Image 1 (spheres, rainbow, N blue to C red):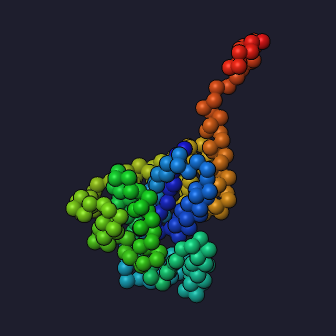
Image 2 (image 1 turned 30 degrees about the horizontal axis):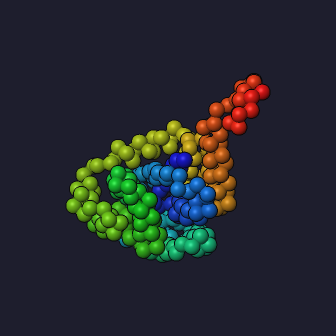
Image 3 (image 1 turned 180 degrees about the vertical axis):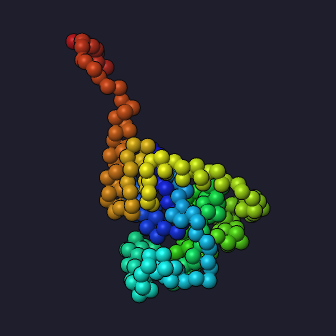
Length: 233
């Protein structure tokens, strides 16, 4: 069963949603049969990285609200994250464009490390306060998850995996996805937002049941036949 997840490293609820989905997956009876693929989605493709700008001040500016109100919003998200077992530090968060981080994830996917890259980048941004648009920071994150240093450096210095990022975003547009996180289960069902683990588990179970039913032949009509115990009627 395939689960595709559109997300942006800059989205706090994408990290929270990831953790809640993982909680559900741990309880899912068929978790070993689940394939998860992370998809790229930029909330603000035109964002200019400003490593010297406070994230709360940036939020206040783009929302047109006071810094006090922006701080309240940040603290609310921090509280929700804590409930999911995550340690957010909004005071450390760097205002950074996520395009290069998405390219790194796409590269990591080719090495079977997509989930590891996603997790490491979320942690770097929301917990450690690293600049996810800084190529040296990205290189360190890559090597920490066992990606080859020289190969990663070449990727980051080039335009590699730009097409893959754009392809995911075009696919999201074709699906009508306007917000993340967005989970697509077996290309049939969708779950939008950082839902509860219970909701995710219900969706996983429902998708699994229906996918198994599809594998079984549909009996149009029952006629005379013989069963495996030798009975014929």
